[in-house]
Image 1: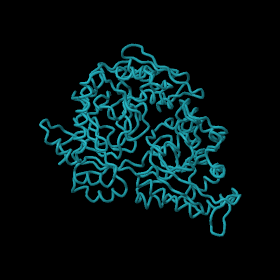
Image 2: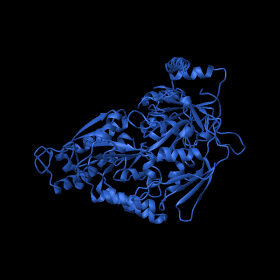
Image 3: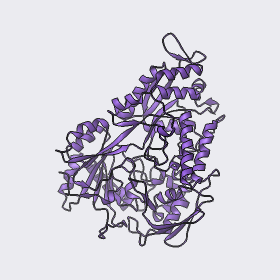
Image 4: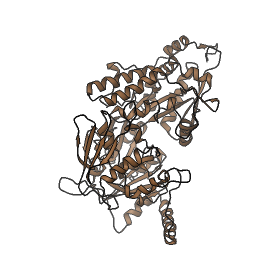
Length: 603
């Protein structure tokens, strides 16, 4: 992340910056327990909710974010919002909307007297700026733009202001998820960001690309959600304070949210996070299967409740690099390995060789389910195995049979060789730091050794992994996850579009990168891309379900992603917190604005 551009107009601002930095260091040196004690001793004590999170935020610029967790759910809001239990769309910054008969036009009407967290008015100008200047701006690599592309032409919607409270969105053809993706994207403040979009740096890029990094004073980040950021201490915490200008009120006219302060404790080590929760220094803890068994015994006497949200919507998979292209005269993938990876029978054999039931029993302690699709199980578009989705139950003999039919053979030591006598061996990468993902990778290594394949399993830094996947593209296989899978399949269009940002199993170069020569797309790949265009165009729900069912059948037959398991999701919440409506779709804090505390402090 490039440093944020700051004004240096006066020495006084510079001096104050040094002073604030000293204060931040002083606060940042506090342990979580000292932090809580410090807050208790303040003269003006306020109610606060404390939750643990495993990593620091990567950016404060929503338009550039691709990571989770992030701060944006709390500080921003779109024209509409989705219910975290059902996915139902509800009014948010817009009080209403009208859809034309031909389904090509939506007019949103903003609520009266909306304001940003700095008290400035929020108007239709902000909505138009957010879309035309940021999300739809080809100079800004905003992931939001991928899901707003329409049809085979990949046209983008047009957005224009009708008056101070009304904004019109128009698309060239019917687009089924139009309301969801146009209305759900957060609105960003024109008065704070417009100049950074207009101004170019020395390379001709918008200064916006280096604006609002995590080195920005959080108090300067302007939002329209229920909270605003008050402070951020690297590796320690993010503190959110109730946004006094948030529009929402309860039935009695009381302003929301009820809880004045919300604290994110950043604790990378899960054992440490568990200790903090058990010592009553946190109110909410997302828990794993191993932690569930321990905490369940303490639930009643320790005054907390464990909530089950059902199967995780995150998609967990193993993926091979299918790119046959070359860059600067050098193949992205060793041609020998590329021949293996691009055989459907090879990928199917791998799928049969992975023992998902043992993975669930040993790693998830029985608290999980096999996973078979990029579309989550709680979506109406999910095609279940009972309705025809192909599954790969553990069958190492079937795996060996497929390999032999595909031209592979075994030597006298049981090692798998290709038709030219080369030992079948590849490297499987994953993100370092996750205990569960590391255990899963280790089991995959053992499972594949049983069919004669040697896997070199490596956990590497997240940024290094992203560099391999998105930039150099010189990797064999990786073990990863795609989170935030929504109930509408169009959210996966960036996975299946040939130029989509998450089409990582056969990536095209990003803007500004060296070209790839000789890249090929399989017929099934092109068909998946076509189906996702067709699915977005189709307005009849029954026909949409049939289209996405076909897509799931094709994906499971050809296996660009070898799906693994879905852990059940659990969260432990102190009984002092009232109003939790937990689900794997929305998480534990999707309705943070309406949560209440029965006392002011963690006891």
